[in-house]
Image (cartoon, rainbow, N blue to C red; front, side, top):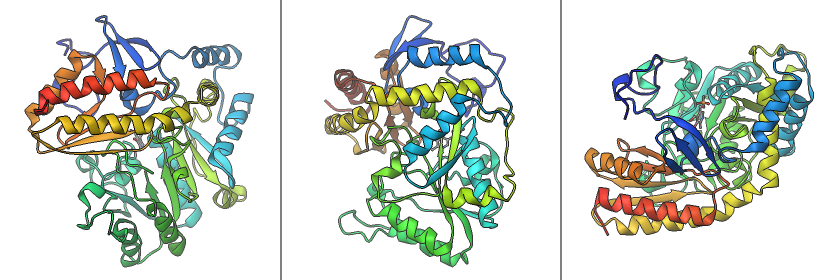
Amino acid sequence: MSDTEYPFFFTWTAQKSARPFELTGGDGAWFTTADGGRWLDLGALSYQVNAGHGNRRIIDAIKRQADDLCLASPGAVFPAKVELAEKLLALAGPGFSKVFFCLSGAEANENALKIARLVTRRLKMMSRYRSYHGASMGALTLTGDWRRPPLEPGIPGVVHVPDCYCDHCPFGQQLATCKRECATHLGEVMRLEGGGFAGVILEPVPGANGVLVPPPEYWPIVRQACDADGALLIADEVLTGFGRTGKTFGFQHWDVTPDLITCAKGLASGYQPIGAVIVHERVARHFDDQMLACGLTYYGHPTGCAAALETLKVYEDEGLYDNAARLGPVLLDELRLVARRLSGVRTFTRGLGLLAALEVDGAPAAAWARLGSELAARRLSLHLDGKRGTAIFAPPLCISEEELVAGMRSFGDAAALAFGGT
Ligand SMILES: Cc1ncc(COP(=O)(O)O)c(C=O)c1O
């Protein structure tokens, strides 16, 4: 904690409750702070630095681009912009034909929302309660979680539906016997609302809201519901994109093709602010003759494109998608070991790839505060949400098995002290 009053705002907090720390750099799965601390980053500093800290290749690519061409107008063409778009289309898979560039996840979703409305000439959108889609007004209205109510009312026409939250099924079902009501209910709500939706936006695995891994039939059922209504399906891959779940994109775990894919965070591993909407040909074609009423001054910014292009090469050259897939079961096993150590509380563990959650039922705020200070003492950084009872793990994809296991064992010691256990 710092007593200094800084001349800028800290986000999502009352300013007096902010807990700033002075970040100085990092290397791989570790970051450093000005007090000499070296932290194991089990949260990829808010799910962005998939390639790891201090990656020289990405830094040098930004420097080279800054030397060659450091700024551009939205209408400008240069190699990094073209190559990045080609690469993203190849990663998205067959049928995707255009990329819309932007600077953040919120902007990616804001522009996907606009594209869906422009193409369908419809207004209504559907999303889920346990979701986060960004802080701009459209993306925030699509958001279902605690960040939306302070700004309501948002944009018109957004309907929220319950989640694929199997550990606390909103339909009172058990996974083994359920009829995938979470997915069929979405189509039912569409019909009850009179249909005519422009789009449905979903995180493939809702991340910050607790890593809610859907049953395998979920996405195919939702795809069918969208097709029945003529709504576009938007995969918000801002958090899950670029290997987080062990595949390039989260939706690729299931046999579905969305109409739009939104991404940011891992796109350039946070080394530059850049996001994108990857658009399927059946949607993109609309704008051959119609104006695309979207734009940004920094559209396809040169250093952003260069950083993203190099990041995507790093992911491939270092086999980071495979590393996430390989280490996912290790992370989940370790988390289950932690859960077994916690005798005084009810726990749930969930995960896919290097994205996992420990949910702790009924622990008091004081236990979460203690967990926070125990983790700080051990220099472990991850996303804790005591109010909603979750700890979320999302290390850089370059983490080694030894680092991951040691970090999780250390987390287990901290959790046993905070929540009670051995
Ligand atoms: C799934 C998802 N979508 C969108 C966003 C918004 O991204 P940004 O903060 O870059 O606007 C986030 C950020 O956490 C996210 O997790």
